[in-house]
Amino acid sequence: MKQFATTLVLLAGFACRADCRDNSSMVHDFDAIKSSAELTWTPCFDDFTCSRLQVPLDYSNQSLGTASIAFMKWAGKNATADSQSFVIIPGKRPPPNHPDFTHKTKADATTPGGPGGSSIDQLQAYKDRLGSMFGDTYNFVAFDPRGVGRSGPRLDCFRNNTQARKAFNRAHYTGATNTSAASLEEQYYSAAIYGEWCDEAVKTDSPYGYYVTTPAAARDLLRFVEAEAELAGRSDSPPSQAKLWGFGQSYGTVIGTTFASMFPDRVGRLVLESVMDVDQYYANDWRSNFVNSDEAFAQLPLLCHAAGPDRCSFWGPTPENITARMDGIIERIKGHPVPVSGIDGRSLPGLATYSDLKYFLADGIYEPLKSFPIMADVFAQLEKGNASALVDRVERMYLGADDDGGVVIRCADSSRANKLTTMEGWKHYIQDAVSSSKYIGDIFPVWARTILCRSIHAQLPDSMMIQGPVTGIGKPVSFPILFTGNTIDPVAPAVNARKMSSRFPGSVVLLQEAVGAGFRPPTSLARGICS
Image (cartoon, rainbow, N blue to C red; front, top):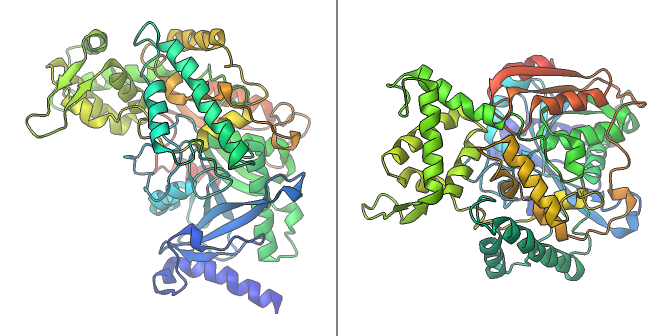
């Protein structure tokens, strides 16, 4: 009887893609799903099945209570109830105007590299493309890591005090680090405000708000694959032998490598793309990010010149001419911001600043295929003294940020090894960033928000922290990891992939000759990888 009931649950989850719209049990809110220590799938959001899996806050001290982790599943076109599940491991959260962002959850403000991303949002945005990316025979599973989006434990550092949050944002997010003689100092000292508010929120409202570390998220993933095996009830695949099959980008590669280091015998297939340097991540010291940033930006004048005047609005007779004009515009706007009156009714009044332009460039080099034509148009307008396109496209940095998940995860992870705790350390970090990249080196450190960790005091047990180096040396993984990326990735250079591959004997690095932060769907490369 139990086996029959299990089969019905499995078939209900699989059949949801076709029949969900007529199902009276359909839910459109994760809060409507009961959290359970056993994996149960509920029809949700028309085309999916969803679950809230109850996991221990601390796997080494389960008396502390539990947290609920949100999962969503979508069946591939040729998948069956017994098909392999393929987990999309989330990385950074996209900006609000990005197609990955559905506005159905409040997640962390745009943070390059993550954490703070929701693969549930990505699954909803890209479900129709997953077959071309990975093949049609998988059940695709997405989740929000603990502390993000729909998963607990959640921490609101400003405890719903929107005025206090806006006041802090105005004080801290002042733009590029070199916009004034005091910029560095203002950003460093104002970060103390954030830490005080977060610590107080943990003390008074959310005692386990810092229990959101990456090692804990890796344990949650293991709990999921075991719970899925328990639900399947197959004697040839007991939960103790269940393995993770997954794909992770950006911060997702930190989760992936951490999982492989902690549970090397539980790796099924793991593809990690746009690889982060895990040592730098856990030390809150991202110095290798900028190795290829300027090379990525340099592709814009090259491609613009090659496209010709009819297809590139900022065309010039040589790539060098285009580069020189762009550099001149960047230098001019630093001393002379461009006012936009908005009197023509096409836009609101605004002031286009050096920091706005730098933020725009840093965001644009992530996805050159989409952004380079827009960047050319903006430069063409700026050359004529018109900044309306820039003002329209750039949201003021973080003035609308209303969530803390990604920052809290990063700060909890680095709480014992944070290298950005002193003014001197902050200055050296900025100097290294600027010397590595003249285009984004002075904006990325503020954009990445690493300095906010300097005054967060996360008191966490050993069980929540990474123990020793992240590596597969001496404990080989059960199946080799594939590290992938682009030859010119502006924020996750290939050197990161090679370094992490050296930590996992037998792993392979596969690079695509392309510019940008990772593969963008649709692509056939990932499908070949997974098959």
